Image (cartoon, rainbow, N blue to C red; front, side):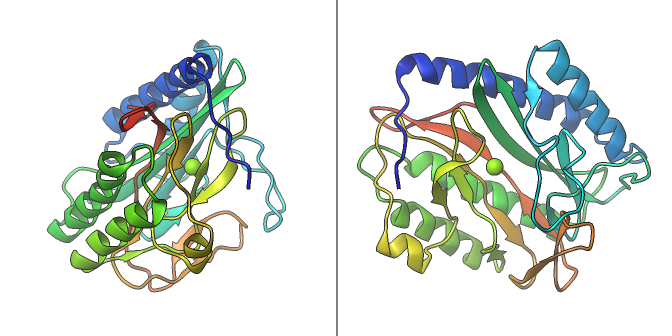
Length: 258
Ligand code: MG
């Protein structure tokens, strides 16, 4: 496993890509009202991407499980959908929905990737609790990431926090290194896996990671729908997703997609 360390010049470029990601997600959060379609949100993301001179990272990505490449600039996943929901003009969000939006951009050869879950209109206390708990996992990762820290420590704290809230951390999907490619080494789990334990990541200045906890209200099991993309919980209960691209600094970390 070769984890790239980015120079301050490269971090500056990643920061610029990250700023576009932050702009898009903040705009979509504002627009995520009952009645809007995920296709409209996607079109908005595409427009902002183009006017910034960037490219949308997810559009055109291929999967061995899907017959068609991913068609959206964003992934829009509602309620029991965990990740990789395909945006569509036919899919409207309703009052009380949890909408997870994941978006990545590439600018001048460098990538940014982030996700937020938004409560559309008035959400139930339990859905709010799930969103807060998922966001907390990301906050833990940001607070704990620093040079010399082992990822098993961070991931262990994330996993414990979710369990204490009575929720389960998704195990089938994890975060990743990011830089000139959207997915680079290492894999960045939000739980302590056997693989991580035997090959721990020791954080170093210049590492750039996309940390993205996905948390289920019910059981951990997920499955992919027949479109080959949309991942849903097997028990049909809600899921939430938060993500930031972070760079390890000399004393902690910097969120590049804030
Ligand atoms: Mg990601």
